[in-house]
Image (cartoon, rainbow, N blue to C red; front, side):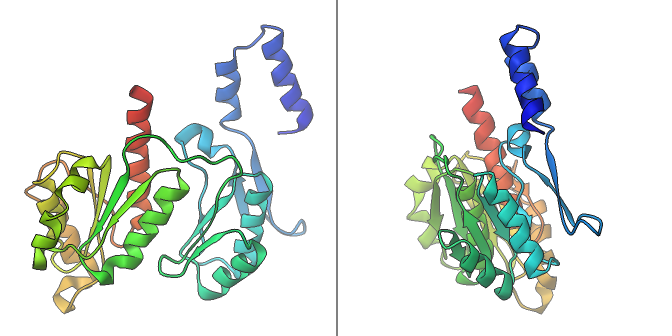
Length: 260
């Protein structure tokens, strides 16, 4: 949207010709910025106002993109003072983004690079509490943690509390009860979300991981176990999808905040 078009919208509010809510609804669908060499079709179309519609902005999925594409997309997002979150970065892309944006938070374990927005503030309310069954699940759990923080939520981590040593989990009862949403990350047989579902009434987002021996089938065993959980009402995302779990948790917490 050009400055002149934005000015006309603001003038229409001042003249009583449009309501602020109607203008906000229109702005939510604009603008889309094309990114790429002018001599070629754009390789990306950035949705700068997604945050107005869904509560969080567009995230850069770096797998399959060149390092140059990742950096240019993040540069365009950062230019709007909105910051950026880049996920599934390779070593080269992560190093390039760290060099381009020294203030960014680089998490090698999660393979993320996060630059906070200029006016970002942590949301009020209960935290997103993230549990991992084992240490091998930490890359997925950390992807969820970084994403939740980037979306403005407080994060509590409870790692290596799997069912093979259930007493480690049972000692964390207070933090389970204090959670707004629990993200439960587990591989192997994927039993941890069912156990957590019997200990708290908070919403649970289960994340199966590809961690496990041969018969785990790359996380399929954990996925099926979570889908067939005896604890009612558990939401299950795709294998290794820590990002998607944090998105689900953020939607739940934002809806609760609007209704409180």
